Amino acid sequence: MRTALIAGASGLVGGECLKRLLADPNYERVVAIVRKPLPAHPKLESKVVDFAQLSALDPFPVTDVFCALGTTIKKAGSQEAFRKVDFEYPKAFAEFGKQCGAATLALVSSVGADTASSYFYLRVKGETESALAAMGFASTSIFRPGFLLGNRTENRPLERFASPFSKAIGFLLVGGLRKYRAIEGATVGHAMVAAAKRGAPGTDIYEFDEIVTLSTV
Image 1: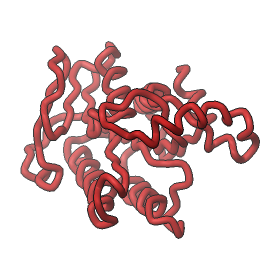
Image 2: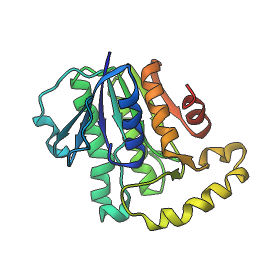
Image 3: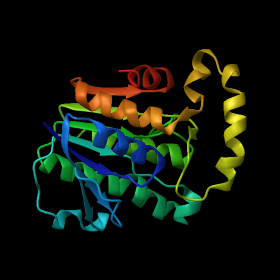
Image 4: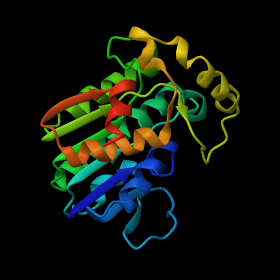
């Protein structure tokens, strides 16, 4: 039986990942690191902790780590604040998961993530990927979805406006552009759990086609 440690469970992809974990009989316990408690479930334990203070937590046995932390520069308010949420917190969370003995890590990143990108958002995403991949988990799965579809708990008017358009132009994105196709948050969440259970050794990066295929497992 497996124990999952998840961060970002109140977001779109993290929430879908959490649903999948709670429904999966292979997981007997799911621990969510959160800012406020999640709705009760027999398998779920919410640990309300400031991500800057994760080191204060005592480690406990964990098999799989799921990181779906992320924000936007607009919501964060500055590049510095964005970097804290999208780099510093995921790094601290993954380090804690490693201390707990986890063998697998699944990370939600972004299509186009690249440490050499001139675009700050994508550069930070790339740096986060690199930092977590270097931690030495037996299996690291990095997910790079494009525009995410689904119902968010937070208000993002621009994304609601863009969602129908993103769906409509999907068929135009072919060849090397397929990775930019919009994708359901539930599909990504499903694929994350499938990847963790598979536990392929080393580091794997999943983009649109690979995510869709993995979500059918």
